[in-house]
Image (cartoon, rainbow, N blue to C red; front, side, top):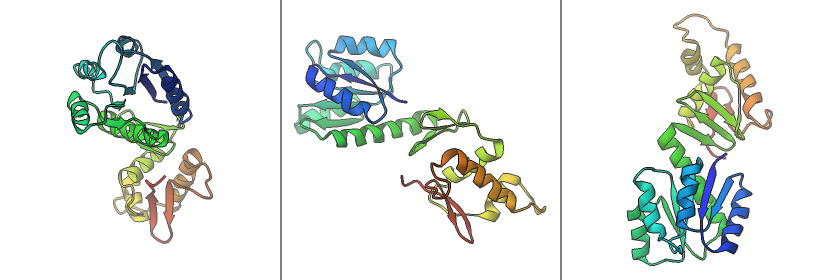
Length: 226
């Protein structure tokens, strides 16, 4: 579960943001000035920062510059400064996104999700799709932030499908990749059994799968549309 740091001096807005964003399943740390933000970053593992520019003790732009000296954690500016030059200054400081007040909380949620997804993929070779998160470097799979234990064959199948998401993979292709058959006979039912077991572990409803889609008469496809 990602942890989001909110640096916003307006107490009512800060609390409202924390409440609304927390509903999307994030951990929230709220502070009200740059100094508290710097301390929170040192004492906690933060995945994303929502940062106001007009802070009482130090500009959010300056804090962003300071953060960028040592970290590339994603930063979203949320500020009343809405001129073209303000936005340019924000990106020059190193932000990943810039949202002007007033704003839509739903748009903010979507942008948080998009920025986090890009960050995970870029920094950690992590793929996120719906409730499923896969760390390809560590060979770890999570559903709703809970680890899933897969057999080596199940993991290889999941990895193959995800890395070819949106493409239909023929049964023969999957069998060759997973079992390295080299012309030797392999019971085709082995693939069906592996797919069935994998679906039980990652799908909410195995009868109506949303991740591993059967393309009848051909093979399987990983759906990236959630």
